[in-house]
Length: 229
Image (cartoon, rainbow, N blue to C red):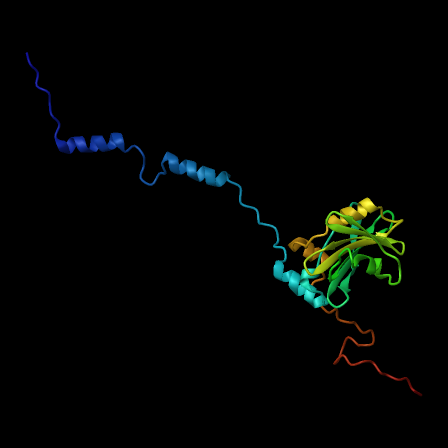
């Protein structure tokens, strides 16, 4: 005997298909959305970047405020030596000078940059450490001149239109240390400028407290005179 299959009407099949396929509630996030939200929650917040260092214009403004030509500002370094901040200043018309101190021996390294040139012919004529009238010896050392005279020695590095000199007392700083400091001389970057040159912004004025001003009235000085003057 052949049984006939019952065919359900389309109106009855539609709700069943929707129930089987659409098991998720409306508005619920799918797996990908949940994963994205979890990743966002677990990701660390970006840390704030470091404070900006002064830019190239800062070097020019600070140097010019001191009377120094910006292109003549240099900085150096040597093991054990630190900058003596109070020594930073102008040299000659618009040159630059600064001194580094050895914290253990108190030996001094002086950096001086000024306009001019130095050659084999003029080297002996230029005194070491600005000590005029003293005999100067010159020895070529790579691209620099090693010079001695008046109890001091220095390395002089000719640059375009100016000379960078690093000098010290001969018996206080060995030649190899002096050479290291001379070869390390360079134009300061933004952070070095901030540490080397004083700021052009004036320090806030501190009000002066007067002890003779009464705490009442218009604040005029107390000029009271006792009986009899």
